[in-house]
Length: 339
Figure (tube, rainbow, N blue to C red):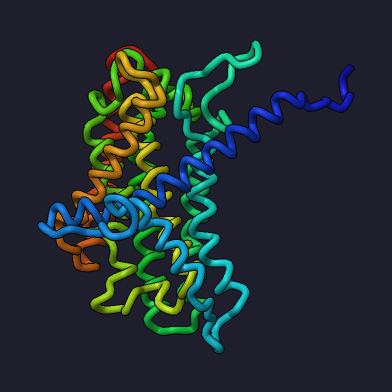
């Protein structure tokens, strides 16, 4: 009957809750061991051992780090804004976790007589939600520096704000051609549109711009100017300790996994691939991006701040705009509407 209340299906609710729990378990576990993997890979690059004492091959090092952070004193500067100081770490971690809800990480499976999509929420505006959540993450950096009432932390947060806002523009523009090719903002449609060929083959420039932009969004070397310890002690989280300090890093490593998953979704066919199950293909691509981020950290030096801004505003953004025009012209010549 029109206007009648829709009774939610208990099985549907159960499956959604199960997917949320599975995503949280996988993301948090991978984020913890990504820290361990980074320390071991950097040690391999720099010809040293890395963590190898806690547990076999050092595999319990993430647990030891967690215990250390939980037992350290949780301190707030006397002149700081207490509520905002405690809110900032959550603002850095939660948007990254929420973003993964829209990422399709496998082909739909049939459970209890129904097709279950392998993503928490298959939204029509999934790409727009990703851009919105990435904008909210900026507040974690801003509040962490401002609420500390420290000049070093404030300068680090101002650097972070300028960097994240600048590279969000090039990141968003680099994804416009994928929307034009897939004709949809839904991430599952973007993956389905790549059955005939991954978008990296048609949009190598967009992929390169997106890759550089997400490195800056993750605040990774060579773009870790908000955390330049030689100038700003530790940047926007200088005054943090204990688990709140750890939350900033959990958010950073979750962001690496999420942005790696989005890069795979937009340009590498998502979960698609021959022979192996879709889940293995998706997580293999995500971990390949994570390894690439770590490799770049162990290879490249940090940029100067003027170089960072020059690259974002005078190189990447114009290139992304030219690429959009070229894609539209190519689709027009091919007899297909670019919108």
